[in-house]
Length: 334
Image (tube, rainbow, N blue to C red; front, side, top):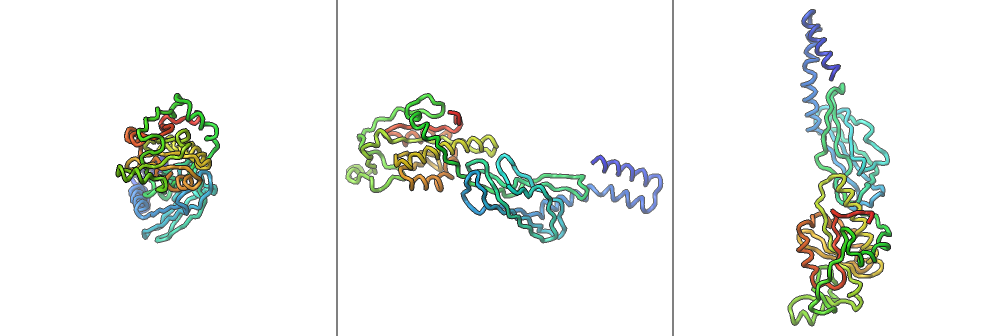
């Protein structure tokens, strides 16, 4: 910009003292350069079409996944010096194509095939965040975010954290965001409880249904002491790096505990908010796998804040321990 101002001053002085065709051509060329550059950049914003996608709907955290970026010039004028940028704390491209600039002829389309690695679990926007455009001589430079970001669903890593904390979850009532609530009295006794979505129909107490017209589920004899109900109070994601990091640790902790119960074939009832209170029973490797690959994308997509009373009301009458797992209080050092 300093160079442009110096040229404009020089052109003005030159045309004032010397005149002539060349002086006027030079003066008006310098004078009109910025307006024409603005028009050119606006053209780029209109004509440039950008699409990006990953081949898989679910991505494993820290694993390279196929990624494709498509850049198209939909207009009649060439486009030059387009560079891309992204949030490196979230996304990693092993072969970083954003270090070079792209040029497109009229109606030209460029496809970039690459690998993408996501650093955090959860559902959020990743990949290319936007692009930078500039005029021919680099005097004007603007950034613009892509119209349609890529939405990823990244699966958390399963760790052995559950082996060390299960006992503490059951006994320590002053463990930050994790604490046990007094188990409500089960007026129907310890053999049955209210039917919950996800329960096997094979466990329904049909005789009791015939008497009451309400569904109840039979409980295994040893379920009174082993049954755990986990109420998930998730926060609303605001897209910030801090919230993404917190969700990553939260999901890692959750699936590690769920995997422990699934592999041990011990029942774990998960309560979460998703257009109403939802529940799911994990009691086998199969039910854990379904939770991990299908239901996990729904957990946290709607905030559980403000719906805690609704979820605890659903838990009323359950036998065993009830664990409230609040995301906002999560501390991975606990």
